[in-house]
Image 1 (cartoon, rainbow, N blue to C red):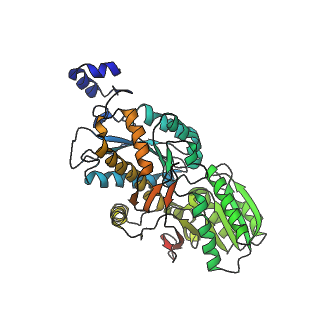
Image 2: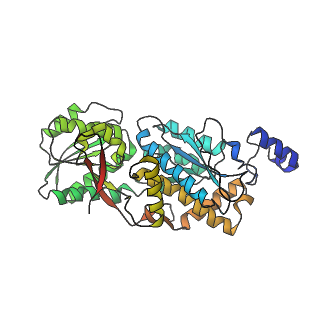
Image 3: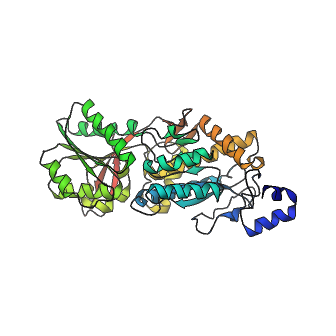
Length: 419
């Protein structure tokens, strides 16, 4: 196939019309980036650039959970990524060439993430991937991208050792070891008399297992008593046994590491069973999609944040306005991180293009050079200014804690940021 591409202009045109992916490892960028090459099963948006060529676009893969119980998080990532695509293409894309997001659904398990990565790399020929949603999925899927030498930016993978997966793996999501302790400290600030702590975590989720270790260590570091550790599954809906066991020990604080659906149900059942103390939620509960799950009983939950809609800066103001205009509410952290991940690709491509035109590079070379550029760049994102260590760990300065405040009828709520 590679030899065929080099033969004649006529044959190139035929390949383009047939949309059969007629390019391979030695192909230069203009032909494989023809706008229509995304397969019908992909949920790719139809954004076209306002400047530059309209016949080609640079494909960036978005591999997040659009189905399963993890979709409560993945849907927010889709929203953030699409807003980034629209915003940066309105600014001219990559020095005149638009980007095109190619979506693949990872669902909520490792198999889904692996399949999504393989499709994006081998069929859709993307230059890099944003994803997956869960750290559990990243430990399985990221090595596939790393072996193929395709850049990967984790938008919400905060477990320990994610960047260490490989040279082509980075993340814009700050590690749980930095973020999680802030919410426990905020709880102590609200109630300095806290003594007893009960911890719950999803034992089948790599991130929750990593996060609970940080929470439990923070409890010890703050001189608090860990009275019980209760385990559950992210697929669970009934927490009566674990909640009752914990409540009987009279904790002053409950800490939950799970996802939005299971975590929200656990919060609800704790309150229904009479627990009246403070609740700290981990990063998996950091979404407004938890509000319909526990409704009025969500009120008061504390969650550490790596993003605030109120963060100063032009890019965050633009992102916040676009999100509010589209969804009539404040943007959540998962959307902001997905936006930031797409932004990193765009700005790294812009910088690389100034050194050597990206549409002249062979795909394998472009992926390699792009990965190098990502790691040395500085990016002023909705999260604030970020960069990366040589191994791909995000460097971020600003962190927050928010508390859920529900309306009187329990149908509406919001994250209120603590000072």
